[in-house]
Image (cartoon, one colour):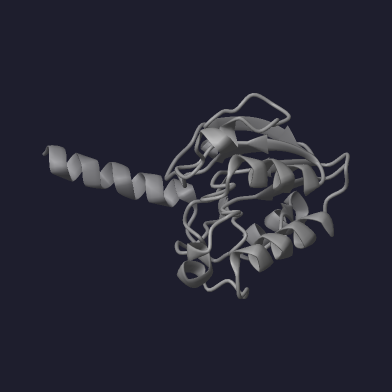
Length: 188
C-alpha cells in the first residue's frame, strides 16, 4: 500500500481561500474539493501522514464528519493551527510533533515546520514539512508537502522523490556549512 503526505488542508477555513489563492468560492466548496481530491488518490488501506494544520475554524461535529469521509489511515504531526478538536480526532497513531519513519526504504523526518537541519540529514534522511504554503523553496533533501504546493491533494513519496531529484536548490550540507561559518565569525 502506498503512503501519502499532505499538510495545511485548513478544513473549515474560509480565510485560506484568499490567503492562499485556492480556487473555491466558499468554505463548503473548499472542503468538498479537498475531500474529493484526497479520496480520488487515497485508498482505505493507505497511510496518510498529515503534517499539520488539518483544520481551522470547523466545529467538532464538522471535523468528525470530514475526518470520517477521508480515506486511509491518518497520522498527524500537529501544526500551529491544530487545536483540541483536531487533536481529539481518532488518528491512527500517537500524535508527535516530529515523526521519524521509513517508507519504501527511504528514511523520513516529518514535522509541520521546515527545518534547516534534522536528525539523519547527513545520512540521506529526507525532511517533509508543511507550514509555508509553498512560500519557501524546496532543497534537494527537503520538501513542502502542503496542498498549496501539490494541486490541493496528498502526494506520494515517488512524486516527492522525483520532484527533489529535479530541484536545483542547495544541498542542506552546503547550508549547514554556511551557518557554521557565520557562527564562527560571530563568535570571533
